[in-house]
Image 1 (tube, rainbow over the protein chains, first blue to last red):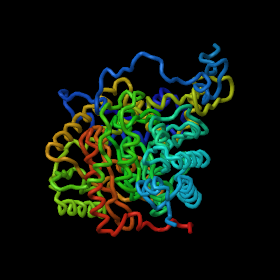
Image 2 (image 1 turned 90 degrees about the horizontal axis):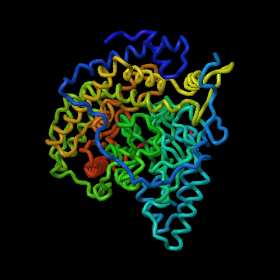
Image 3 (image 1 turned 120 degrees about the vertical axis):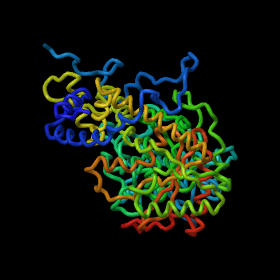
Image 4 (image 1 turned 45 degrees about the vertical axis):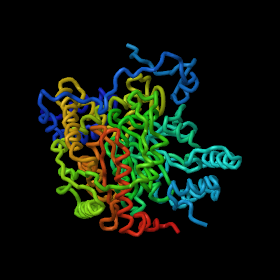
Length: 98
Length: 499
């Protein structure tokens, strides 16, 4: 496995939408390298013939009857939002001006 | 008059139904105890005084006119602050949810309300349940009632400490890699992780959805069974909820007997890395079980050594995805940087300010494990290891009815001791993680003391066979209490600074 660089961590932080200071990036790079190094053997354990398990006790076709049940009111759904207007979540601009 | 906080839930329930004690008296006794010791313990993030007393007084009224009541009606309970409750704040131990109130109740909370159990409050935890010491809570660590300089385990250290300090007879926890069982072990309490899907996860704030499970935190095995029967069973709100009936768990706890039971000692979960005192108490427990007629055999689970590594790929991957919802739009904190920032910059600033270090670490690790080019090598490989662990369990359960191991490799360590070493912290869960990977149920019961600190013994059973845990756990509890002359917690020191 390739080494994790500071640039990698900066990229991951951008993907995860977490602003990080230079000091945080330095520290996280070191910590992540140690953690990844200790768990990399996982990728060498199982052969191609072993199927993946995503859920420990798989169930399939879990559907309920198509009838309206209990739902939150509009007011309840907005009750924890930092900002709202006209019954909707209100957010800052999605696009830059330019 | 008896100190009501010292009674088990089963004992308290009896006194309530015979009307020897009122629910208001029971709740008030626990609120008083919280007022007395919680400044030192910090088990509670929120104390729900008014509502708990109101529910208790309703219970007393209904009981006095002869209404049929649930056997636990009036028995108070604490709830881990990862589980959402209407009318009380839910923080998940994070700044990002400070002040947030859920508009709905978790299914388990609704079931507590249906049983008329007063909720004493919300208990402390590592932020979003990420940690093994409660030190990653944004609201300060919880302290171990056995030694205030030591951790109460995590992530559910608040629930375990509340029960161990007699602030509540019962509590709810959540267990993703050991967050119910490891705190149970280091505080001398009982913790159960039910079969995956056996208890609804609806309203449990998700960390790793394929691993998370809600379960009981108590002082006795019988109490855990009583609580498990209240919260367990199918819930249409959780698509991973099993349709099986919850099973006769209380009956199993009352029929504590290991005669003829095949108990498999997991070769890989003992010896090197396990503290001497932990191993010694474990060996003594095995001797007692043998003397009581159990057939103790050794089983090997060779792939368990990869469980921790695979867990630290699967859990952060799922967590990084689950925690994407904390974006400053629908709930919780919003941080707006100077200027006219776009939503993207608001998200980056909000998540930087709202999440603590461990949460950031796991989100970044999960983002890495899921990113293009690494997905197959990391997340995909870890899921295959998960299959191998399940196969190890399947093979072991052909030789044994239940498996046994120490719950945690060490007793409670000192606050701050492992805070700067994430890897050392992760190793606390080495014996509890395999159960989450395979979805099988597990229980931790007190196994005695090593250097004055509690040690836990863990039983594991096949999926859907939770009753076996209660049967074996209650048997070991009774054998050990005979040797101690009473419950282990009777040996706990008075909490320093409290008369």
